Amino acid sequence: MAFDRRKFMGASAATGAAVALAGATSSPASAQEAQEAQQASKGPRTYAFTVMGTTDLHGNVFNWDYFTDKEFDDKAHNDVGLAKISTLVNQVRSEKGRCNTLMIDAGDTIQGTQLSYYYAKVDPITARRGPVHPMAQAMNAIGYDAAALGNHEFNYGIPVLRKFEEQCDFPLLGANALDAKTLRPAFAPYSMHRLRTPHGRDVKVAVLGLTNPGIAIWDKANVAGKMTFPGLEEQAAKYVPKLRSMGADVVIVSAHSGSSGTSSYGDQLPYIENAAGLVAEQVPGIDAILVGHAHTEIPEYRVKNKATGKDVVLSEPLKWGQRLTLFDFELVWEKGRWSVAKVSAKVLNSNTVAEDPKIVRLLSDEHRKVVAYVNQVIGTSTQAMSSAEGPVKDVPIIDLINHVQAETVKGALAGTEWAALPVLSQASCFSRTAAVPAGQVTIKDAAGLYPFENTLEARLLTGAQLKDYLEYSARYYVQTAPGGVVDPAKITNSESVPDYNYDAVYGLTYDIDIAQPVGSRIVGLSFQGKPVDPAARFVFAVNNYRASGGGNFPHVPKAQQLWANSEEIRNTIIQWVKAKGTVDPSAFASVDWRLTRAGVPVF
Image (cartoon, rainbow, N blue to C red):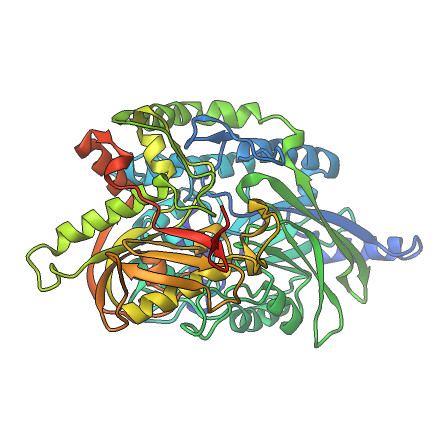
C-alpha cells in the first residue's frame, strides 16, 4: 500500500507535524509500574537499537552502469545499488532484530541513472496508469521508514516528485521545503517511530528531514513561486524542541546537506549549502545526523554542541549505495525516561555482499527495458573519442558537447536582434569515463557525455566578464612551478573543486598558466585570432545549473537571459546525433586551450 501523504499529515498539517508509529503501543500504566518495581532491584534498564542510512542513491538499484552497459566498477572496486544495500540491511536486521532497527535516507533518490530517467521521461510514472518508480519499488521492498528530500528530487518537476511520494510506503521529509504562498510545510517535516523495548517502556525516535536551500537556485524553473527553502539551522531550531516536547527520546536529523559549512552559490542565498555540521553545533537536542549531498564518505564525525557540550554524531555513507551507515544507540532508563547513553557510527561496504535476489526479481523487467532503450543505435562516429584526458586537455568529446550547444543556441537566436553576435559555449568533463566509439553510436554513448538533467540557456556576456569567468574556472588547477615532471592526476581538483565545476569555453583560444596564482592564469585570450576586446559582447551557451549560480561562477547568474530551453542537454545531443547521422570530429574539434607554465606547454 502506497504512503498516503494526506493521511500522514492529518490534523497536524496546520502545525506541520507528522507522526508515524512503528511497533506496538505501550503497556497499560499499571503493568508498566509493576515492571518498573520489579526491575528496580535488578539494576538499570538499557536498550540498544540501530538506525541504518543511505544517501545520494541517484537512481541506482543494480550494480550496473547504464552509460557503459556493463557492471559498475571503479578504481576502488566499489559496488553500487539498492540490491546490494538490501543484503546488508537484511544482515543487520538478522543480527539486531528487525524491531530494533530503523532505515532512513538523506535524499537525491530519483535522478542520476538512465533507469531513473526512463521512468521520469520515457515511460513516466506520471502517465495515466503509469508504472511505479523502480526506486519506490526497491525502497518499499527494503522497508525504509523515512527519507529526506534531496535537491535532485526536484529536477523532473514537482508533479513527478509528488507521484513518487505517493508511490512510497514511507514519508518524504523536508522541514525547510515550504509552500511559497502559505509558508507552511509542503512535505512532512518529520516522522515519529516507536520502538518496543523488553522493559515495557517504548522508545520514541523522531526523524527530522532537512533539504538543501540551493534548490531555489538550481531548480528555479521548477520551484519559483511554488516552494521556498529556508536555512537548515533555523528550521532545525524550530522543530527539535517541538519533537522533544512531543516525547521524543531520540532525535535524528536526515539532512541533504554536507558537513563542511561551505556553499557553491556564494552570496546568492543567505543560507549555507553544506550546513549539517552547523546544525549539530548550533541546535541543542540532536543525537545524530545522517549527512548527504556532498558525495563523501564519513564513517563517524563528532561535533560538540555549543549549548549542551554534548557530542552529536554525524555519518555520511558514500553515494549510489556504495556504503550503508549504521548508527548504534545505547539508551538507559533513568528519572522516568529513556536517555541516550552512547551513540557510535560506522559504514558497511556494499561490495562485500551479493545483490538481494528479491530486489533482482522485483525489478528485472524494468532493468531489461532500460538496457534495450540505451542500446538503441542513433548514428555513427568516424573515430573513437574519450573524456579520460578531459580535465587537463582540450579533447574532441568535450568539443562535441560545446558544438551541439553552440549550434542549438545559434539556431534559436536566428532572426533575432542577437543573431549577429558570436556564440561561445561552456562545458565540463562530467565523467572521466565517457566515450564515443568508432562506428555505431547508441543512446547510452551520447547520454554518457552528460549524466545530469541540465537544460540550456543563452546569456549575454562581455569580453571582460568572460576573462573573469575563465580565471575563476582555472582555480581548479594546483599551482605548479615551471620545470619538473607533472602528474596529471595531481594537478586538478585544487581547493576540492569537482570536475563538473571546471569549465572549458568553446569558441575562444587561451592558455592557462598553472605556475601563476589563482586570478592571474589566463594568457592570450583571443577570438578569431585577435585579442578579446573587454567591451565586446558575446552570446554564452550555458547550462541552467551554471546560469542559476551553481559553482558560484561570476557574472552569469546576473547576465541578461536571451533564450532558455526546457529540453535536457543530453537529449539535445541525442537528437543532434540522430539528425546528423554521422559524428565527425574534424568538423568541430580543435585545440583551443592548453595548460602552460611560463609559456611552455605542460603537455
